[in-house]
Every structure is written in structure tokens, then in C-alpha cells.
Length: 348
Image 1 (cartoon, one colour):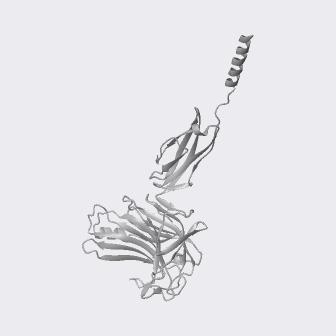
Image 2 (image 1 turned 30 degrees about the vertical axis):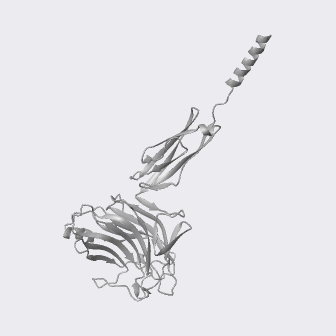
Image 3 (image 1 turned 120 degrees about the horizontal axis):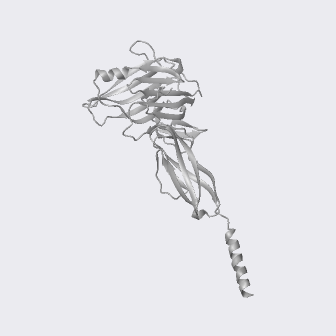
């Protein structure tokens, strides 16, 4: 009888071994921090998995554009977007004791740079200002009692960024925008808003004269004391300015393209897209609320006159706004959906 007992025990052991369940592996999601990304943006990606042996899970990441910057094996990684617009795929395969499942997530790269102000931390910095994110947009204002103007800016920190460049954002004023120039002590400032690019010299430095600043400036609430008058004798409520600097003596000379257009008047809480472009041929474009405000060859002519060889490199993008006269309430500004492209796109 003893052999029979041994056989029964062995049979029982075989029975339980043969019925062991395979490892459970179910992918809940492959997720990314956001839906739209800009050139070179670093994006957190992660996998959520159900398994009965989580410590045994190993993750293998891959992408068909850009690059993954963290080691393999973990349930999260960081993807650095490529410097070309398009749709790209990230793939992650999880392996638990030989059982494998994979998931693909599409990543949309849309432009050189953007900021939607959806999160408390954002990549614009302030000068002489406070800036609060509210309801998915930025609300900046001058917060210095001695300053006439303030700005928020984005430093690109890209030595290769050069024309063609185009920037656009939703802009407006929420409250207290002055109807005329303001005074703080002896300082006076026009009641304007403006986009501005600060520029770097071409590293080749072949030209003695170079452009170090461009801006589009306008009077969103008009000017009760009367608009400025251009060299043609006509009043204007908007201007494109580029500033020439002499490398020998550092003297700066501004050049103006002026315009008077009804689209440059903004009612309170009326937010419009304001776009500024220098195209690949150095033609200047400005659109406000979808309307073409400026289409000028002034910069083309300047380069031809001065036989310019150097390219124009962009350093920073600023949104500059006026404060308030002493004792008055400071204007509150609206800013949202800030985009920059360097592929020749003309934002409108």
C-alpha cells in the first residue's frame, strides 16, 4: 500500500502544478503630460499596468522621433520632442515573467515653442510685474510704484534660432487701461502694448550695422490727447519698429513703419490674436484679429541698402505693457496661447 500512497502524493503535486495560472498583465494606459508639444520639449510619459507580480514587471520604451532620456526598465520615462513639427509615436512594452503586452501613444509636435498657461508653473518670466494664472490664461500687471512699464518674456536660449520667425498670442486688457500717456514722477510712458523680440548678433559678425531689436506697438484704447503723427503727416495707432545698432560706436537708430487701423482698438475684455512675423525673405507681417495690419519690405530695403550679410537671431520674446500714473489703479492685462514658429509660417 505504501507505493500507492506515494503515487497519490505525486499525482496531487502534478495536478496543482499543471493548473497554475499564467501571470496577469493588463495595460490600463500609456500616458503623457499633455497633448501638444513644442520643439525640444521634455515630456514625462508613464505606463499604468495591472499585474499579479508587479515587482517582476520590466518596461521597454521606444519612439519613432525625438529621444527617450531615461534608462529602460522603469514604468516611466522622459521624451524629448524632435525639432520638427509632426505626429510621433511612443511605444512601451511591459514584460512580466515572459508575458508581454505593449501600448502606443501618439505625440503631436506643433511649433517651435508655445505656452498655454494651463498650469501654475509657466516658462514666461516677469520684470517689474506680477503675473497670475486665472481660468487658463495669464494676467500680468506692473507691480512697481516707480516703473512706468513692465513685461513678461520668454528667453529661448537657442543660439541657432534665427529668421524666419513668427510669434502670436491672444492679448487684451481686463481693466483700468489708461486712455492717455501716464506719468510716474518725472517719467512718462505712452499708453501702449507691444510685442518685442530682443536679438543677438550673428556669430559671424560680418556687418558693422546690425538689428538688435524689433517690436510691434499699438494703442489698444486710443489716445484722448491725440494720436502721434508720422513723417507722412498722418496719425497712427500702430507701428513696427526695428532698431539698427552701430557696432563701432554703439549708437542705436530706430526705423518705423506706421499704420492706422481700426483692428488695433481693443474694447475692455476683447482679446485678439496679435501676430508678428519676419519671413525668410525678411518681409515684415503683422496680423491683429485675423486682419493684415502691416505687410512691409522696409527690412528688405534696409538690408539691401547696407549690403547686410548677417542673419537675424532671436534671443527673447517679450509682451510689454504700460502701468498707471501715480495714484491710479494699474491696468490688468490678458495673455494666452503664446506660440512661436521658425518654419516660415505666417501666423494670422
